[in-house]
Image (cartoon, rainbow, N blue to C red; front, side, top):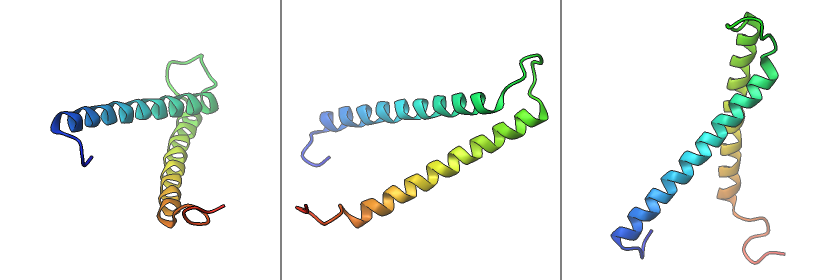
Length: 89
């Protein structure tokens, strides 16, 4: 953010915060929808069955572990730089 005045830095930070919040809400919505679709099947009771509760817990854990691993992998790839170096084919 070098080269930006204080007002521009503040505006940029606010924009970045909004974008991060939107991404979080999108990720959360995706997680809820996916786990609901995969795990919830009995609508005759207002509470979750043991099977549904276990499935939901595993679904959420798997989602977060996968997200964490992808983040790590992207960081590793980013640290290595672009394939073929700069100006590669």
